[in-house]
Length: 207
Length: 408
Image 1 (spheres, rainbow over the protein chains, first blue to last red):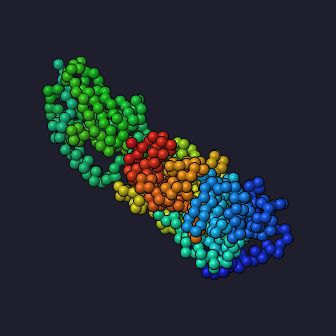
Image 2 (tube, rainbow over the protein chains, first blue to last red; image 1 turned 90 degrees about the horizontal axis):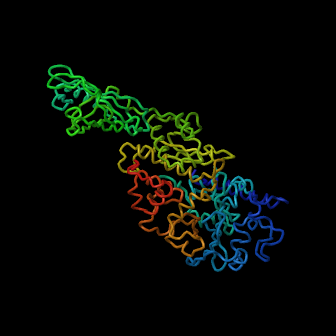
Image 3 (cartoon, rainbow over the protein chains, first blue to last red; image 1 turned 45 degrees about the vertical axis):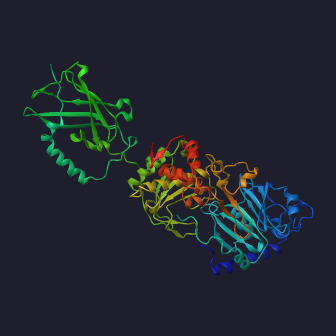
């Protein structure tokens, strides 16, 4: 299977929507569990940074943000630096600005991408300092709406939940999430229109 | 004055003509060259000999030596030449018993004897060297001289799965009754090649492998069950099928038939070099995931092995240095707004690139292919990245270098 077939895509979409609705209806659904509670994003008793969008809203996407209190689509540059501090480095890439922060994995950056001073994407790494099992994600979100190959390492895949604004690069055999990718929530069609042509449909590890 | 006369080309040619004919015939039949290394041989005493003419009488001369010779240690270096002397056409028992010399060892070793024209006359001595050819016969000045009577002494000791397990602690498994895999088995030759790879691994790497099993399969399959005919081998850190509570002893390497396809390395007509290279490549993956005797890294990028590797290819290694993110500063897991995150090797310089296109996929493959090329095509690695070559030489192989897969 290179990517989900059209039928599977529809099935995944149905499952994803069902999962979202189920979670919305549930009263006390558990937060995304991680093995390191201190480092993991938890439902805050009080906002990490007062006034940050999503920080106390109970919004599913915000609670599962790639970086604490950074919500793609609404958080501003000033709010990012207020929450996370000044980046190690920043770089202008055309109309986008990337802010680089040390990640849970040594020598790897978490990246906050901004456009017009607003966050449009976050990429965060998971390692021993901030572990996340792929089975935990499946238990939390159900089956992904879309699956593609990934070049991260052999056996890794990109699993996307576009309506939640989440994509995971994970290795299911190792039951590990390697990196997380957050973006403004969108439908599967919009997601595929934006990224479909560049998601890896073929195994990149053919020699 | 007793003069020792030893069989020479002129005398032996009459007597050994038949032997030459027989040997040439044997060579045509047994075309497989002897490739045994000293480590492959059990020490065995070898006898070689021939019959020459001495004044119309049969003159029998024998040489006794150890197959491993001096390479197996000084106690195996001594060789003896036994037989009468032929003096003026007469056979005379030697005054000083068997003549002593040295054999260097192996199927292509050198037998060296000093003989003197006149006992006790050291000023009239010369050194004679006989060349052993593929463990079958000695030549002197290019001509066949002594024929080995027990050439099987140079047959390498068989390598078995049990030997690999007891020596390296790795289970070697044929694939039988595995879901989705066609059965196939390790051949004796493949086991020998595997042993050669394991033997050549630096101890620091060999003792730090998240690996317990190596399995031989016909064709690869990915985790979704799809056939992957282009795969040569694959490493699964949590096992295959994966174990829920995986540890450093869960790792499995699978080697596929395609590993023998000679499409990767030069000077590899039968694919044996590539087969070994594939095993080494996967072993390096097993090293990347090793944490300690009990545990492994689920994200190999947590491993200092990989962090050091990435740093080795960089000019700037301090993540807080603005130069760290320079375009030519090695691997970055990058983020362009309209593409998924992916590995980027921004503008690598011509002399600081992975040695293969496959090695350009990510740092894990870069390191595995670079180590593979260090051993099996070092010139190519030097040409693409002297930084990589030097790091592997200094920090992974402790200065041991290779030429075409053979230790210099």
